Image (cartoon, rainbow over all chains, first blue to last red; front, side, top):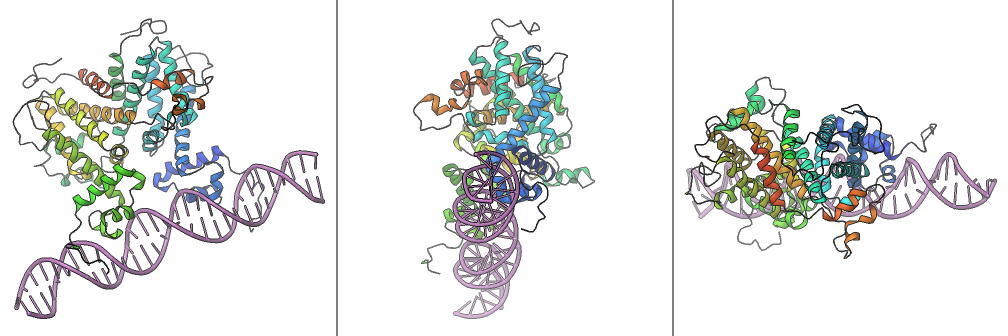
Length: 251
Length: 251
DNA sequence: TGGATTAAATTTACTCCGTATCCTTACATC
DNA sequence: GATGTAAGGATACGGAGTAAATTTAATCCA
């Protein structure tokens, strides 16, 4: 009523724009800053306008998951670990080229990279599937699942084994990242290491080992442990009956 | 002002009582039902009364984590998988008796059992540590960590390896349970399997493998996969230099 | 015994959140 | 140009978390 009706009052918004703003807001100020009202302000719009592009706040969270997996898929499409031509598969450039183990490693790395690129996205990605049935998951998430199952199928695994591998793969990735991202430090501004870790709060009598080890909690190579654990989980999977078409390196 | 001042209007509340009510409420009606006001009603008290026992709602969530790990520890104390006398250790009955692998298996099972006993606790247990520094975690959680590190120390692992095992252990347990508890079904009341799974929502053209496999998503043995994966993660850990005092069965 | 002290719980009230409902505006179409 | 429609705005309501001040009841000490 007051605004000079700038060029496009109409058509400012779109689902991608809304999701992008939501992701940006969460990245900048954390999950608790993500409110419909705040997001509307960021978009220069009244709160209710957002509801044209997402039906509720819960749906908006699923939108974050959607954006997350889109980014994972993008990364898989563009950053091939190997040299191979393009592919028909919506996910993963070098389809059918990499042996299945290597492809799963590649996916794990992409997943981790996107998690690290968005500091507070992990809790959402880890917990929303507890509330959303498979068939209603965001398309990009389904595409990645489809891709993984396709890779395992092509490698020759039967259905049951493919699912077992899939579950182990997802569980390990999620669990690892949840552990990697756990907050260790108490007050990051404190210069003294002991105080920073809040060690004075851990009585040595009750927690001797913990007290001794906490200072080392953050000293490890995340990627190395991610891949090492993944390999040990995958190595004890029964080999596919007619493997080694794409993957001659079987253990 | 109206109530007949039943025996004890004073001293009705206590931290354990508040936490128990919170757990019960979440178990009965889910996490979203847990509001300060609702919890107060359940306790027969005005909302602000709760703040004497927890400083905020976030603190209340940490209280849930506290209650959770208490229960895990209780279970470890009382349900020994083996016959051994009592122990001084606050956690785990047969201290130093079980080889480290078996003890970790026992803990994993207890953890899973408690998760399954409280349908909506997992997201809280999985994500709160992302916000709470180690030194401020609830005592029961710290006790369990201490116990695990002690077991690994006694088994002869050096600090770095013990931490690596600890991280892998926690990550696997959390990840597995998050995957186990993912919602598969769309409408549980629908008698037709296809509709129940919402398969009509998954176009076969885009998701051929997914569509074929979703009906088998829930057909697996959770405990078997939990333990199998745990074993494969642990088996590739470097053996402790002077192991085999308690654990002669090393690989 | 009886007032003072203190702990426990209530009262009141404020701000912010999600969102239902209704309304206005501008564009596309004929 | 009338009309239908889609995008966004205005208004409003109930419920959430919680700060602050207050009442109530037990405890302690004279």
